[in-house]
Length: 118
Image (cartoon, rainbow, N blue to C red; front, side):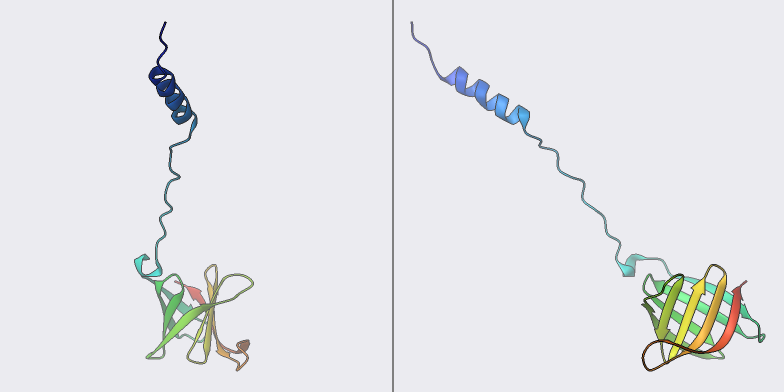
């Protein structure tokens, strides 16, 4: 009686491939900052001034205040969203926004405007 090893090898191969996980983990889709949609909020300040805050990316803002445009970048904050640039700080939390001077050591300076989103 002659025994061939081909069927045995084939069965072993099926067993090995049947026990392996051939599924690939889904690829994470990462949206770049450039892919984020730009949006603008308008704030009415206690002084009567208006601030338009445009957020072109998740880590940048451009503040329009008294006819001037101030580009800013995201900065570390304990809560809310804090942006700094042009010697200014724009800090929002909920519907409140505060425009302040920015000290040389990157801490908050004197408050210029306290505002509410319209």
